[in-house]
Length: 135
Length: 145
Image (cartoon, rainbow over all chains, first blue to last red; front, side, top):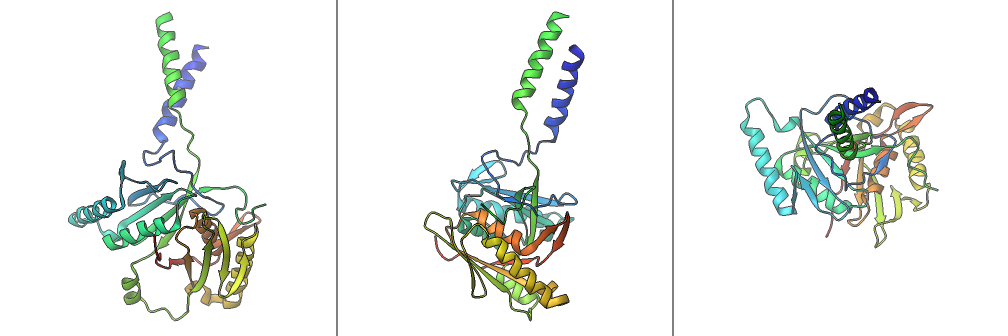
């Protein structure tokens, strides 16, 4: 029994290390059978999350639209200051809830474009069945 | 021995409670430079296919249209959109790689419909094989809040 208990502990310790910090449990992502995990990790990922109540999460903080805009401009400035980083290396990962308003998500995309980012990854949850036909 | 077993059990319970199941997630990669930069970079000859998604006041899909053809708001609207896009891509042949889709969504539409529309136009899975359709996507700027 002690052996099994130790094995369980080892399992949980490893599983704990693999959970991402940038994942907010409040967000229920839209399903898609084509959403594929990236082949290689993004060079410079920036994750912006939007919950169903349209609160915006960026870098662990809950921000208003105005605060997000200034945070993005600051982020762009920092990236430009690094000699070995370019704005084109940045991928903005958008994790929006399935019930968030599309207009609000598009406003986030526009803010990113204003800050100079142009690569986006719209995140969805993988589905084994087709999401195109709903009974 | 007993104190050790106690601690081991406590550890076990701690890990059990902090354990979160992370469901597999995936991305749609979209390159969207700002409108002005895109115009300057490459003037495209082919007109984008315009997919219009209209919303009801509570954010559900009211109507799905592509180039004047309405697919309604039924459960199979996106599947019919995909059939239409597959025909368009088959007719266009190699030129389909240049084709672009512009999504014109109502402000209040639930985001899940956008992802379903992107799924319908970017590709399909048949017999376990993944086939690409149109991967260049852009959004019409949102109109009002």
